[in-house]
Length: 255
Length: 242
Image (cartoon, rainbow over all chains, first blue to last red; front, side, top):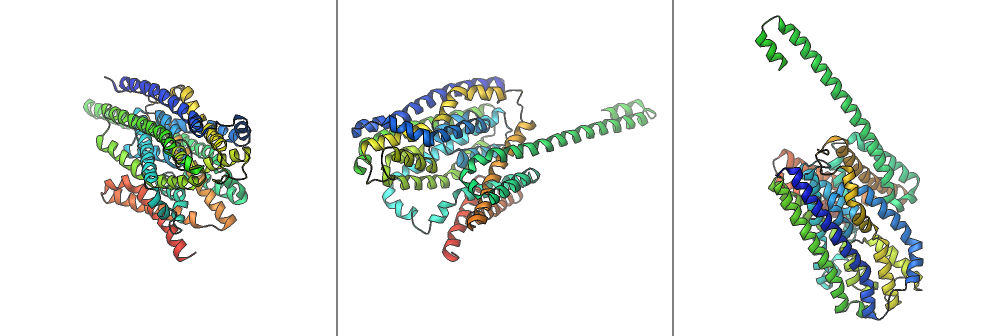
């Protein structure tokens, strides 16, 4: 069976499984407080919940919508699990991008879709296992993990992740990275309060990086085209010169 | 109250939901691996992607476990375990739980003030506020990806889409590093910046060893390894300098 036909079948089935499992997970997440409430003998106060939703929930709703539209192209069908298991920025996106690089898959290809799903599922499973083991061993682990010596380590998980990723991606794309890095640094220096909304600042920073990448991409394509034209012109001159020699040589030059 | 929140029925409800999500992950993982083999992807590379994703996820997961510990003092252990195993993140859960606690009349999120009604309301709000990514996935994931032409012959790879994705990721990383620089100039906290530099340097060594010295297997552990070096530098600085 053709690769694309097989992938289309696989993809359609993955979407169906994704939709069903996400729906079930959603129902379970929303009804869990009611199940626990039934056991405790008190149901959620929906009026209080609605008031709290207006004060903090709306911001998170907007953030979720923005996240969905920005990150779904990176996650592919793996997005179903990514949105069930969360931690997109600090785990799922870097994980999918890194796995894509290991396999050498290009965005939008079946290979990219498959490896993204594979890496996100693996990452989610590891988190679930680590947390399950951690909860099982909570009593002996708690003093170790919360010891003052290790506190700075766990406070800096994200800088450690982004430092490693920065080297990996900046070294090959320095021209694209310089301007957003400079702009963001300047913005955060001039308006320190922006650190409270770092995740929202990803949108303008990403837009700047994409804009610069587009300019370089256009320039590169233009250069390629002019190189191609130059080569054709060169070949034509060579073939004109070759005409005078022999017909066999002429065919070889044109080839 | 805390004893009730840590009781077997609550563990059973939360553990059951987590088990369901774990099963979903296993299904997606196996299907993706098999599909990869079927379309002719290299088995070794697929395995390397799995190992890399797994090793890289361990450290952030321990960080998430700390979030469970932090919230368990007021909400019991099973509920934060469920929330942080699935869609939640500590900064989100803590903020929403605090807002809900205020609305049910608690002065702060604490075990001493927790009531059964207060808990179920807080838990409900924590579930609702961040569910929209899932809702959108159910209704729009397929349509959205189809519109982008993902996985079709048209999207044969390369092109600007690939460059745009890398650029978006560079924008993401730049934002965070910019925030650490801003944080340093405003509060003098230079440790996150040091961690960025050390883990970046460690990554450079890992890449050198895997690309130039023939230790290709190191690539799977390069992110996790770099993170350990970066985090260790934060510990060392705190012990010896601060």
